[in-house]
Image 1: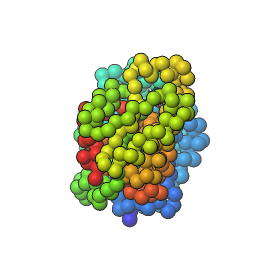
Image 2: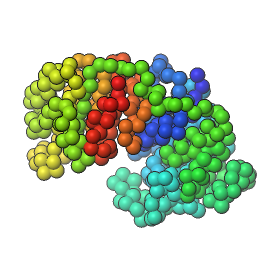
Image 3: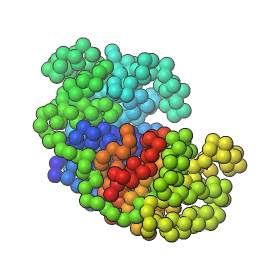
Image 4: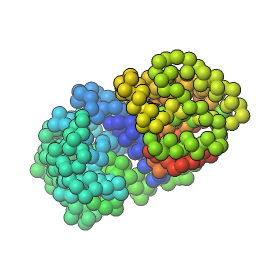
Length: 426
Ligand code: ADP
């Protein structure tokens, strides 16, 4: 099998977002957690998104991890690799976008790399090389106060120039609007002047497809999910990938088995969803204080679930109101309380899977991450969407056989999310 598209994402949520975008475009897509082992049983797919956590680590480590991911993807035949970054270009003068781009470009042997974080559909546009978040320039947006990588300059030609060894050029909107040949000409002219990477303007989603088609002339590109969308459309319009009813992919072959839901998010949306779930399934509300204290709360919860999962789905929630959360955090500290509760939820997830649960819904970003880590799941095939941004995932290569998962950030999904998810997970 030959991959049409390989992607290296610099964080997990960005990877999920990209994998979901590619799937919605019609590409059969697997997301892996880290660089997979050589014997990872890759199913027949068009795209693989390797999720790294390389956005805010030392540049040398980000380079090493990204190179390993690229080698794995090229080894599976990926003709084009997208280095997926945040649509707000999260980075510092030290990197990691520029240094990783330089290293991957060296490995790819590409003379020119197209770079754009634009995704107009989600309010990220680039004009004359300046990145806008909605109506405001990046350096006036909340990103100016980001705790890890405050963004003080909206001009990406300058920002990337500071991080990269290469000369950085600009393909402006007027050129993009004239189409693929105009972009190719401009890139060729800049290459002749010694430019090795170019920020590409995009203000409308239609620009992304044009850019994606040109990017596919090269072996490497750098961008956010918007460029992923452009590349996917480019692959489809040029016939390199046939659009399939991929959304059905991950829901094929019923996994059967018991079903359970876990909620660690304390968002308003999740609290409402738990209340709704109470109408249709047994719900156990955990005592956060006992969870943090490491008492029998976890074992009691597992026992409670095992008595019931034979009859139908159950939901176990640590979620609590803001006031209750403040009390627990005040007593134990925010980080310690959060971590202890995440680990407790992960332990419950593992026990349930060992007891035969094969359909697992988890609410909460950090809670989901802890559960996936504990279950040792190396990757997922992305399936139909339950709610915007939340697909059904089918585990690939895990030690527990096929498991269907829905992993959602706290705020995602409508009031009946838990039931909606289970309805699509068979
Ligand atoms: P979201 O996606 O809504 O941010 P997360 O799972 O990422 O959800 O984060 C929720 C955090 O709150 C986790 O660290 C979780 O362990 C913690 N948490 C869950 N329940 C409680 C509680 N009752 N009291 C304090 N913290 C809690």
